[in-house]
Amino acid sequence: MKEADLYPDLKAYLEAQGYEVKAEIGACDLMARRGDEPVLVVEMKLSFSLALVMQGVARQGLFDDVYLAVPVAEKGWKLRYKDIVALCRRLGLGLLAVKPGQGVEAHLDPVPYSPRKNAARAGRLLREFERRVGDPNKGGTTGIKRVTAYRQDALRCLLALQGGALKASAVAQAAGVARAAVLLRDDHYGWFARVERGIYALTPQGRAAIVAEAAEIARLGGQNA
Image (cartoon, rainbow, N blue to C red; front, side):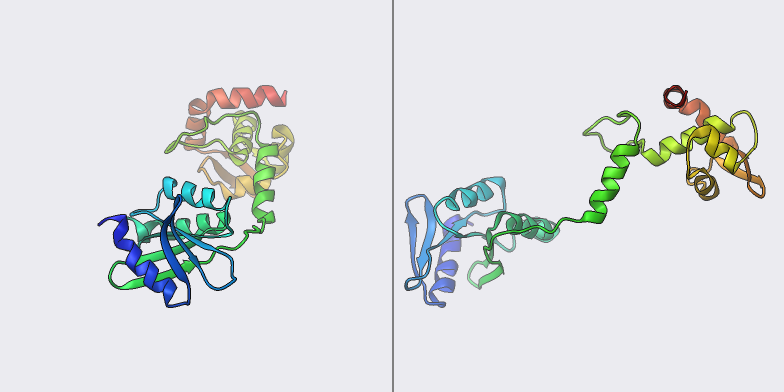
């Protein structure tokens, strides 16, 4: 398939809506106009790519109504569809899916994008940032254990319990972790065991974690001192 194979369907699609369509006007793959309405521009590629997005953004410096057009059968279309639509919407670009010889389907019209902020999620991220001690993770890594503020609190509780069983309230005071009672009860990492009501001790996994997490525990212990 060639990019030119997309043009007949796009031209027919727009002409059916009353547009006058012309190809290769300057750097624009396709320009169309209907009466006195604003000009419409379509940029074509055989796959959705950064190059296509950059072309669309460049045309937005000239006209408001800019569409990106790709074959609907391109490899990865279904897997990337939601991300493609989200990106186009954020950039204010339209999206046309072409089935050569079968027609065109409009998936998105170009409109100014005004994102709604997710205040709840943003708040959770900000709290995590503020509560996490230091910068224990390396940016850009994948498939490795992350040190979160929750994990740091659990490590503080390990440090408090290494001398023996304690009441949850005593762990909270010694570790400086206000939510210690909930953390001990939930036992997310399998480190803590309730020996009787309100009293907790370390499990074998917890004692092993003291050794495995020695460097982080020492750093947190020094921070609490």
